[in-house]
Length: 185
Image 1 (cartoon, rainbow, N blue to C red):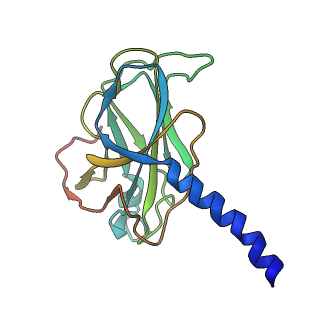
Image 2: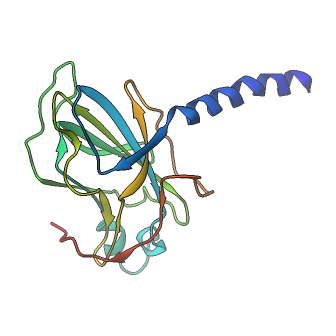
């Protein structure tokens, strides 16, 4: 029994260290240096977006939107890449410059009643990088959640990607949805 408990201690320390690497951030934000940053928040979506009912339309219409993210970005939901623009170094290539970019969240990726991890990886080659437009959002046909305010950030290398959580995270958690004002396109 002692062996099992002692072997679990290093795992707990590693998990704790990984959690501590994420720092507080505010989105939208911009910066002026050449750097890669990862941004993370948690979203609990309406139940009808997660379950198969008579209308699969609800599950199939969920999108994640970013506005004016420079220079390169990619988006992950619960550890799965759902899209991106541009090419990260070493073969750097700027995004096409679309002002608004929407990514469809595949049906089944958002579990019912859980806190979904949303991560946006951003690389900026020079001045005026980051989230230069409005805050990202997640939306369906009639509801949206503007993810403005507290996020978490990870600077540099590969950030640990996770999965949905049952328990509400201590920070960067969103669950308030309002009538949609942004146009789905």
